[in-house]
Length: 548
Ligand code: F6P
Image (cartoon, rainbow, N blue to C red; front, side):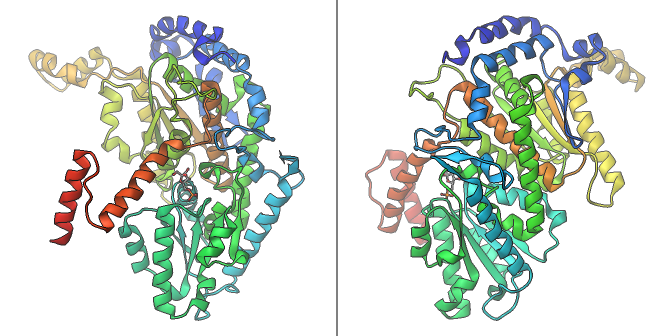
């Protein structure tokens, strides 16, 4: 397949760049009163995605969709639901869509339909939830479980942590959840300090069951529990595992009967739908976990069936290609206007940046165009009082994605109205800004002299013309959240397909792990001076300070 930047449709898009940049967003809306209808899309009755405030026209959209067709995206999408070899550098498929298929569906992997085993594992999770919630599974003193501590990192942490927080209003099972990921013992220490060992359940979540942070935290948690309960025989009541690696799980001391499985065709950052979601099901109940899966499956079907011109994840990905590869905007801000989505930007960072932060294409050649953007964000309205200044008047243009919900689970209608008004206002201000004439007349109306007006006006002008997308849902339900996450998964996949990179490996994180292993030895056994001079100098300083 010809590379993205040599595709005829891409060359046509480059030709359109100047023309498109010459038309402001204000002009586009003035020219076309139906722009919102033309460029916003519905997903069922629950979600509307407004792409009208992007620097694009129907012509650009048509060329982007042609680009997707010419690059066989339909074939790629079909393969995402079957026996693909997307993760060829690790010899694995990427089949996370099978995790949310209904029981009668089929997803083939190496000649086997994997859907029955997905549902068999779901049934085990359901049964486990029933026992924990009913107090049948209890701690070593006979008291029911009150706190679940997930120990995992990356995909074995961010997904369940983000969802458990997002669905906080649904946590009605009497279970508190905690997430320990960091190698910094401060995190484990502060969680343990608030726990009663008799009612704590540790879920050790690791696909490989070898990740150093997770195993270090898991061993420390086990010692803490042993000290409290005084006998190894009690460990089984307080530790379960989620992994693909049964051997390592049993070597750690967790019985296979207390291990929940997933499979190597599930990438870590795509795994929250599997047993990695166990803490979610424990926190909000298995039925709500099923609704999360149902929402994701509905988005899968939308991806599969909707024509590209009406396909939400495809258009989000195509727009990002337009912004990144044609307009040169290499950062994406994501701003959920929902406090319980505070971990959503961090989740998206792993999803997109670990997937698409690649510099080599599927043929092993260096890519000759930009790939994954820098993804970052914060909840609204907090971000407004921190870095939104740069979004409005800074020299860098950052396309923004605003995520809002019409209804709130909390009884504060005034807050909710103001929250939504703020979100809408930010998208408006970014797009339409404030012209110098308006600034001048406002300052004059305040009684400022002509001289003072001339002096102050340039600082108050808002250039506007900054692109944004608004994703509006009726409410943050498990179903909508599932659909939203799957939408971003598919956006990531489509980007990777068009960039012709492997979105499912992450070799870039390996070198740091290896170097850290050697440095741990150095710190354990005293400093060896075999490193670069900066590392040697810092090791010597650490040694000096750690003994004083
Ligand atoms: O180091 C990166 C990574 O491999 C992620 O891709 C993964 O989600 C995370 O580490 C945790 O891995 P595991 O689930 O095997 O502990």
